[in-house]
Amino acid sequence: MKKNVKKWLNLSFILLLTAAIAACSNGKAVETASPEAAATAAPGTTAPEATPVAAVETAKPDPNAKYEPAIEITTVRNQEPSDKFKEGESLDNNVWTKAYESELGIKVKNLWVVTGAQYEQKLNLSIAANDLPDFFRVNAKQFRQLVAEDKLEDLTGLVNDYGSAQTKEMIDRGVNAKLAASEKGKLMAIPHAEDYYGGANLLYVRTDWLKKLNLPEPKTMDDFLKIANAFTTQDPDGNKKNDTYGLAASKDILGGYPDLSGFMNGYHAYMKIWVKDAAGKLVYGSVQPEMKTALAKLQELYKAGVIDKEFGIKDGGKAAELQVAGKVGMSFGAMWNPLWPLQDGVTKDLTAEWTAYPIPSADGTPANVQTDANFDEFWVVKKGAKNPEAIVKMFNFYNEKIDGDKAQPDIYQTSGGIEVFKYALMSGGYGTTKGLLAIHKSVVDALQSKDASKLNPEGKGYYDKILLFQGGDRTNWGTNKVFGDGGSWAVIGQYYDQNKQLTKNEFFGPLTTTMTEKNAILEKLTLETFAKIILGAPITEFDKYVESWNKLGGEQITKEANEWYANK
Image (cartoon, rainbow, N blue to C red; front, side, top):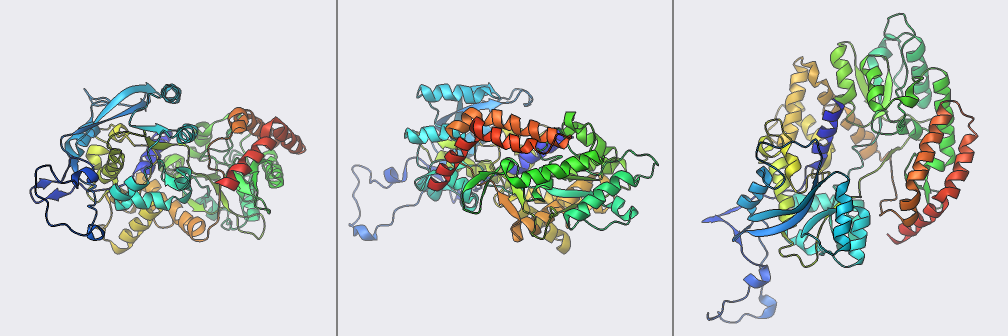
């Protein structure tokens, strides 16, 4: 189930950019050359009477035009061993490559295909040899190298001329993502869709236990602590055994589920992100004094038995087993947690009920939830590539087939149980045009009005599942708790979007030199120290950790991060 939710997330966050394939009165529009070439009079023809230059309108290119004859673009790909294909298909030949050619007039040629981590290594070799494909995916470090070496096309004008309304909206909405993909005001890449909400923590509480023990909803951290202890000591499952826990945790501390950063945020502590201090400078959240307070409180909870004694050796999957078994009453995690693992527990126990809440605060100041966005992946065009505008057309096309008003998800999303969306050239993390928050709002509006006619196919799918839940199908409880009224997206919309209770990672540039060299060491030090403190090590270990973090490269990284921040 965990794997299924990750696939659902990947799919939900990759829906991107749209443009319909328009038809002219005598067939599809045809693109045969650049606008400049098309505007040139043919040799041997008589030009019409001259018109003043100032009065000549530049012909606008048709973003929907099909290339005739077809053009060929080159790219490079990676795939995972778990990826599946229909019989006779591959990344070279599938529903997407056929559609690119038949509807856009674009033939896609993969120069090479590798598995997993081999992609970065092989692309580095291609960059070093200056043997680049026309369109390709890069990480932030590769992107900055190619920009510095002047090897990429400026996409600013291409997006403006060929991008659909949704393409432009997606890019313009993501202010930081666009900034990360730009150089001196020029858009040099297509960035990920900016999403600061999908991974933001919420507090999930087993509300049937709250009612049974006559406890209030968690509006403050004091409320949370009282509930956590009651869920641990007052036999909320009624089996007359001391076998329940107030809070879920795993050895990874962070990770979407169970994610203790939400608890830390209640103490205004932010793990593994860069935040601004009172002077406006960047500081690393993990080494700030507030983190010491949060860790000390987690240690108290562990000693009191609120947290599973074996959390230090359990990953998220193992931690979920306790929650599914009905032995854990609260957890912090992302908006998708009702789909997994909570759905599994609700299906198993018909009395179980969970509700999402914003992060409770330890003082009178509302808690801001920490959040990050992916600015480490971009699609770029090799400088000098023929028909560079084709990349924008392919983005438009992808979103139309997956997320547009006339989407065909049964053909281009999942077909015959196979996730064919992965075959598309740009299929990872580029997002819906306005994000899942907008889809939630449209679904709730449709439920209230009982009119689903304005929903896109994705929204209609959630709407239908919620209706099934309302009709008694508890297997769709999770969809209702994510996209329905009062679900996780409703909490995100009210508190994180409207009330701005969000603390974003302020560093979204490429890894600095020292980050590249030292991040792995420093992250290992952080995770090990935090786990030891929660398990009972003296809280003074935090002070030693901060000192070591700075000496092992943290101090230099902070200088480099601030240099980037001052010049971004």
